[in-house]
Amino acid sequence: MIDKNDWRITNQENYLKNKELIYAHYKPYSSKWDHDHCAFCNDTFSEYGSDLHEGYCTLDHYYWICSNCFNDFKDMFKWKVVNE
Ligand SMILES: [Zn+2]
Image (spheres, rainbow, N blue to C red):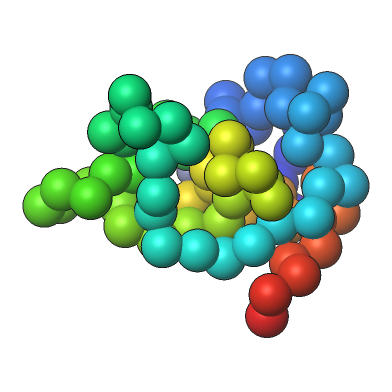
């Protein structure tokens, strides 16, 4: 069990608690962007080489969460994955 003092926790409770998520292939939120970061560990999502290509995101594709962080924090944040 991850505790609340984990270095990856900042203020995500304000915008990610109890959210519905989908597991998706990375797609930029805006056509002006070509990458995003995991909302917790800051790993990079993009369509390029060694970056992450798949993960969990909010229904609007705005916030992305990598699989590691998803597994670590899913109980704390009570996420509901709606496309599994
Ligand atoms: Zn992460």
